[in-house]
Image (cartoon, rainbow, N blue to C red; front, side, top):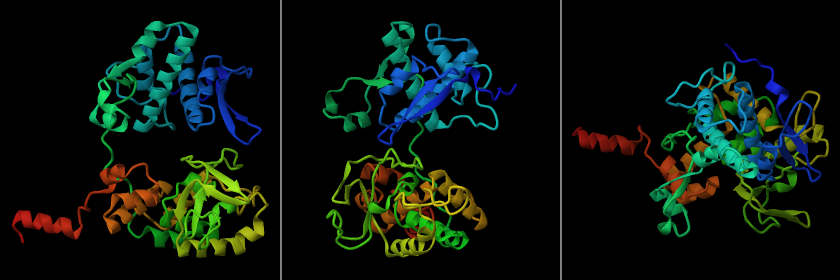
Length: 396
């Protein structure tokens, strides 16, 4: 039987607009009263992107718990595992009626990892704070032996004897060795399929850098230093600064949050990305035509070109939709996503340079080791791969 689309008990996530432009997230009931169990836990993530993610994961679990007639005092580890099975995890037990039914899809591995972390933290916090259900708290607060990777990541890792574990988390699959790249010839095909100078600029900027879509749609004009020897003094070549801002009107925000500041109208800090000549050309084409015609003075780079919000900041979801439709018009296989551009340029730079550190710097990745593990493998159809196989097979 399909689950009702009506929100049980009217539990929902409430977005709170802060005076400084930021946003906070909490969970409220039908009468707008704050859930006294979830709110203190979510407050511990104030100012981070985890607060929003955990709020939506947690409200889904609380709705399921309401349907099952469970409370914090009565729920057990077995019940929480049943919930994980109902949303998509593989659990060796009957979990009852599926919770996510069409058109919803079961959680993938990443979403299950997030849900497991949110639920463990929530129940340990609320059981400790209220002094209830110590059995569940004890079952969740387990440890495991540290792995070699744990010891490498930790300061004084050689003296570590245990690491926190999560009994709700699904087994993490091995790191994907072949991330989803763009189809062959995607860039020229997409440039032919787009309809506006803004969309052409987006395709070029995603193709020639490793920008994430949140960082791109969150750019302000002051973040762009598209000339030699800019006043910031941090890069001699044309570049841009991706700065995390919590109060953008289109709710776009950079994923990484290095410190940045504005001094005498000049941005310094943030994530720095080099800019190609083609990116600069596309920028001026867009600015002298569409932006000059429709911009409303908010200072953000990408704007809407149609509809009731014409001239207002363009959202990340709208940019994803544009790429998807352009891919369909160009008859490219699969779904064109912004992340595929990031994977593609990292793979291309590593192939051209042979140095994971260069690819790591170009892509602003966390570590060169990760770049080498994920992208540092030969193409199955490369000349070197073919030559090695032919030699081993005795064909050459």
